[in-house]
Image (cartoon, rainbow, N blue to C red; front, side):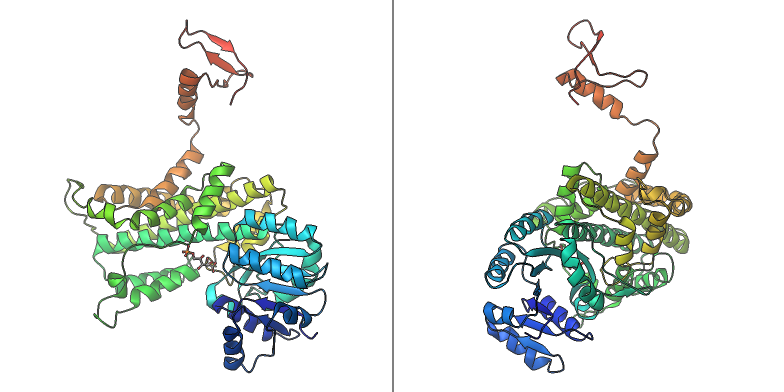
Amino acid sequence: PTANIGVVGLAVMGSNLARNLASREGNTVAVYNRSRSKTDELLAEHPEAEFVPGFSYEEFAANLQKPRTAIIMVKAGRPTDAVIESLMEVFEPGDIIIDGGNSLFTDTIRREKAVREAGFNFVGMGVSGGEEGALNGPSLMPGGPDEAWVTLGPILKSIAAVAEGEPCVTHIGHDGAGHFVKMVHNGIEYADMQLIAEAYDLIRRGTGKSPAEIADIFAEWNRGELESYLIEITAEVLRQTDAATGKPLVDVILDQAGAKGTGAWTVQTALDLGVPVSGIAEATFARSLSSHPEQRAVSGGLPGPTEDAFTVEDADAFVEQVRLALYASKIVAYSQGFDEIRAGAAQYGWTIDLGAVSKIWRGGCIIRAQFLNRIADAYDADATLPVLLTAPYFVEALGRAQDAWRHIVQVSAGAGIPAPAFSSSLAYYDGLRAERLPAALIQGQRDFFGAHTYKRIDKPGTFHTLWSGDRTEIEAEDTH
Ligand code: 6PG
């Protein structure tokens, strides 16, 4: 056996990861794909890389040094289960099976248990950065047992992106922790993308600027506190002209956003955990709304604002207000995402270092941004910070942005332009700030119709008002 690491599944992500591994000093990479042609293609197209091909699972296993370490890069779901089963037939106790797909963390928890009970190590690993990241340096979020990390850590560090001298990989936590964190990464990605889309829409409809002009604005923003991969590629997309029509490409792309499900998982999981990730939820729902042409087709006649068309007096000032609204809403989205990780860790018994998570997202992944340094600073200062956006840096930024943010939400509502992520982020912010919330009234309503009881601000205990009797208050059993 000559290889220290193997890759199963040689579609784009798998072959790029294999090439990345092979390009690093000290790695020899065993490769296997179900259909032989993909393996042959990889070998033919990349003679520079020293791959050790296997054409059966037996051969693949025989090519690997012990403990055998194999990264699975196939579709999440059934195909992943099938490969795991095949590897367990040819591997030996102590060997390490890594799932690098976008698997649902609860599947990872289930698989880790089954694989561990059979004597192997199982690592569910989030991989971010798309095809380009897989090839040149992804952000890696491995979960699984400590024992596997000993072997795997150095290999993963050799291929991960590097941000400020540090590899973008850390052992996130046990069993499903890595895939959980990757899931939330994608949820934040959805929110980030939606916020950028709302900013673009408002600028375009408010100022009449062309996509190319707005591209320049995003390029400019990318030199400041919003600097990030998503802002950078937004400029590229907006600047692109369609060869067939000569129009801006963005104007000929069908306005129905796809989704492969990780955003929805983030929201579903947050609902279960009781964590208000409203920005991520709005972003996910905005994609859903866009993808119902039959509903949109019958809704164009719904009345809009009676006021005159949307006019912006000072375009530069408006653009700056949109930038601030975007920044403030982005802070909310990340704060909510980290809240979900905190809650998930508590629920599933993981020890997750939130500061370390923010650091491995500084490079390689889709949400990589300057801003993540500020999140790392916040957790460095206080690792148990209950709400990220209450860290001093963010309080200052929100204070600086809030007038513009409120103005932009008002303007968009007044003009009838949907800005669900901007406005829900602001509502979340104001909800957190509120000294009293109307939740008290909801408790009263619940007690009225269902005797669900309430607590009082002035004394301990649980109470119920005899609403259908004489409306006196009695002490009650706590029913929540
Ligand atoms: C990444 C991306 C990657 C993928 C998304 C796309 O981190 O590299 O998040 O995982 O591009 O899953 O998701 P949607 O198809 O749902 O937009």
